[in-house]
Amino acid sequence: MEEIDIYDFDNTIVPFDSGSLFWGYCIIHYPWIAIMLPFQAAAGILALAGIIDFTKFKKICFSFVPLIPLEQAVNGFWNRHEKQVHKWFYGRKRKAVVISASPDFLLEEIQHRLGFEILICTRHNRKTGAIIGENCRDEEKVRRLYQVLEPSKIKVIDVYSDSLKHDRPIFSLANGSCYHIVKGARRKFSFEKIYKNRA
Image (cartoon, rainbow, N blue to C red; front, side, top):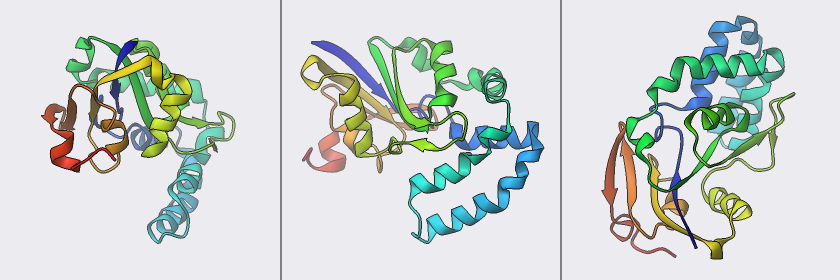
């Protein structure tokens, strides 16, 4: 049985939300994408009102992708922000499985640079920016994990995330320790103390 550790990415391995920061980077470097701002603002209002779901909101947010040189933008983004990866991530002891709601086109480059073994994230069409399938968050993270690794062949040891609200499903897999990431610091906690039970 293979032992693994699971990591969220945004505000866990790095101290920011990578999708949002990438959007800001692109607004600065490719200002013509500002033409999409009214549509994105409207989508935000509809999402807050519960009229559209978060997946549809993200689809509209990344609709600027066809308007930029994507590979160049991603490389430029990580050239600027790779240094912000928390130092403790470099000291990992087991196979690392990073599971994130952020786009695959954005995180695949940092996976290559950091050398972690498995990346599971939200799939996007690189030509249109549209989400393919479901947004990789909450229970979807566990479902996607088990698509990649057979449950009977792995043992999850430690789990790291900044979100106690959204990442209960992956925290429930830990056989070792759960770590809540707060401002880059790792705070170990008892799953049962926070969530009462694993059901």
